[in-house]
Length: 101
Image 1 (spheres, one colour):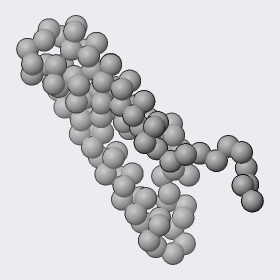
Image 2 (cartoon, one colour; image 1 turned 90 degrees about the vertical axis):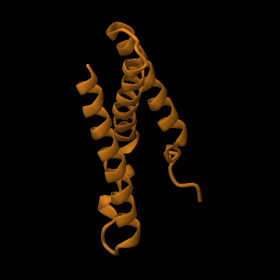
Image 3 (cartoon, rainbow, N blue to C red; image 1 turned 180 degrees about the vertical axis):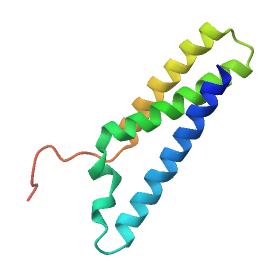
Image 4 (cartoon, rainbow, N blue to C red; image 1 turned 120 degrees about the vertical axis):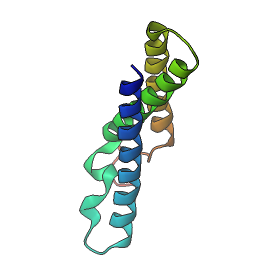
């Protein structure tokens, strides 16, 4: 199970770094607005990346803490859920009301 958690951590970190790089490129280069990750993937993409990273981090912590595999999976799922909730609160607010002018 540790290998699964390690892969999830790596994928989550790559996803977070990719999100940051695409956001920086889209805001700093002309004609690159189509790279904006919030426009391309939205809150679902942000939640998936956070969930994968949270699953890996919580599962790895529980495994190295000496917990049995069943309990470590439960903790990993709880970590994924917590990361999704945090990503939802820290993300960009979506404009659902239309134009505010």
